[in-house]
Length: 142
Image 1: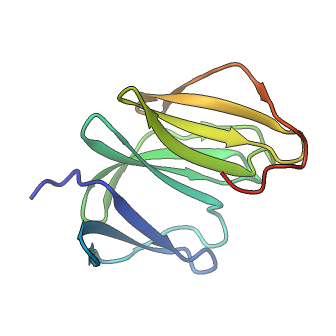
Image 2: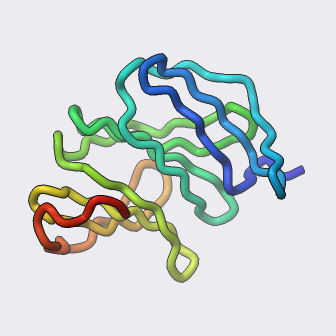
């Protein structure tokens, strides 16, 4: 069994901070691992993504801008990289996608319409492309 399975699923309860990580086994079968406790009322976004046979999770707090990248080590084990500080109160929507074998995150602010494409570089590093100016107060979901 490969430990860097993808997709993996993170079930998180914001109020309690408790999180379960599951590895999809096919069909309707998910192998759930023992729970882990994270900070209560803190995490606004959990975005899983895949890069070069490894699985990662992006954890973001909108109010503080604190952003962390963790590499899934299997089970409920995550290796966290040094924290990043993104703009406070900016991120309303985040979506992960892959293109040409690379992983990207799309970051969007609903009020301004400002959006950024970020290419994952490994560890806690992203390459941010130029601003995408989308229509203000238009996008509700990515």
